[in-house]
Every structure is written in structure tokens, then in C-alpha cells.
Image (tube, rainbow, N blue to C red; front, side, top):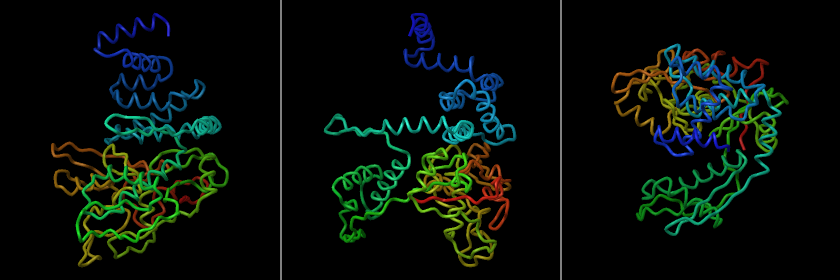
Length: 393
């Protein structure tokens, strides 16, 4: 770093009351907007982009070469700005990052693959001392292994009875100890004589379920990227590597016959999660298979045919927290051609469902595609006519 850069860092830090590192990051963002992200700078100047999303765009495109940055930025801004212009809520957070990664993987699959192989070669796990008799674990693992590890901890944390006194985070930590000890469950600490934990639970050798969604064309050797639930975009070659050691199932559209059951069947359940792409609340990043499928119009248990059917057009995916919030009465949810959230203040928001393959409700014409429709996100948007594939590891 030259002296001129340090002088500017010091000036900006003094003027904006920030340290050297923060000033340096701000300078880096300014240089990117001046030299690489011209359209992003213009959108920010018009007031179409806030600083939060500008930073996301800069971070997501930091490794894109100069020869491709213009096309990547153009395609990304088409998606980021489309919804705000039509009255909706545009891409933010993980959805924006996923959109950028999908575009980059399409335009430069060889480059993405080379970077992934380098990152995999640098994988590690480290354990270091922390304060108060604790330690910290830090590591970098291939995406599928990381998701399997996360799923196993989640599974172990939920082996206790509902009266266990620990938090979910504490039970996950204890689940890691159970893995180290070779135990297949977390010992319940409810202290109740009526504890419902099955003491006969034994260690299992099965793999946790990890969901990878891809097109048939990707499985056959194409370059369209896939989506690893709970992680994000993976390049096509990586997806095929994962699929080679996993069970591959075709993703089918639900039947046109409206079910009379409250819980969706396996086909509709999977279809809904692919369509939603995760929790459909504003800016929430909870993974699709960690959400609850909620009926918009309540299901009529006394007379299922009377209303509130268990079909895609009447269901929304919410994480447990936002599911509770939706039913708390503080927010109003409408679903005429899309999902609209009305805050207690009266402000209206139309969140965007990104879908696990970049095609969600918002791109497929809102919510007017119940079971059996050929316009549901996915099958109606596969250019080569192939089906979607769900790979379970």
C-alpha cells in the first residue's frame, strides 16, 4: 500500500469517524463504482439502489474479470431493479448474492470450477483456545459436506423431548459432542419423569438428507448451475460430482386432483419448497427445507372441500419465526396474484420468491398456478424441455 493511499485513508477516517480498515473498504467500494460497476453507480445516483445492496453487488462481483463484469452487472441489475420498478421488493441479501453467483456460473463455468477446486484444496478444520474454559472451531469444507454437517447437528439437537431446558444452539453444541463420542442422540435434560425421549435410540450410519436441485440438462453435462439448499449456487460440474454419489429423483409437478388432507403429500411438499426457494418473508434467508408450509386461507378440517385447499396457490413457505409472526395478528398477509405483507404501520411490501433454480412465484405469474398447472415455476421454464431433478445425499 502506497503512502498516498494511507493519506486518503486517514483523511476519510477522520472525516467519517471510522478506523483505517473501514475507511479502506469504503475507498475500495468507491474505486469499484468508478472503474468497474458503472451501471450500479448510476442506479445509486438515481436513488434506485441503497448502500446495502451496492455493497452486496460489489462483494458478489469482486472476483469477476474486467472482460465479463459489464455483462454480469447488466444481467444482475435487470433482476435487482425489476421488482422495485413494478412496486415489489427487489432482491436483497442472500437472494441477490445467489442471483449474481448464478449469472457468473453461467457466463464463466470454467473459471468458477477452477476457483472451487482451489478452495477445496485449501480445506481445513482448526480448534483454538477461547476464554472462560471454552474453545472455538473454525473450518472450511466443501459445500455438500458442510450442509450434511449442519443437518446432522440439527437432527441431533431435535432428539430431546420438548421439555428439555436448553436452547436450540446449546443442543447443537451438545450434538457435536455426541458425534465426537460416537453417540447417536443428545441426552435429554428435561429432568422430568415423563420425559418422552426414547432411551433405545442408537447411533445410525445413514447420511443426513441434503437437497440439490438441478436441471436434467445439467445432469447430462450442461453448464446450467444447480442449487444446494441452505448453501446457494453450485457450478454444474460440482453438482454432477455430488449427484454421482447420491440418490437422484425426478421432480414431478403435483397432481391436478385437489387433496383433502391438511398436510401436503411428498410431491407437493418438494414442489412448494423448490418454488418458494426458502422462507418467503421479507429478506429472510432460512433454507427451503427448514421452513413450514402454511395455508394462506385456513384449511377447513371439518369440511376440506369448503375452502383453504392444500395446493401450491394457497400455500406459503415461512420459517418458524415468521410463521408465528404471520399468525400473531400484527401483520396482514394478502395473496392476490402474489404475496403482499402489510406491516402494523400500514406499509405494504411485496417480497420476491427466488426459487431454487432462479425461477419463483414472482417470475411464474404470481400464485395463480395450482396443482397440475403447466405454468408452475420449473417445468414451464426449462428451455430444453427436461425435468427438474432433486438429488438427495
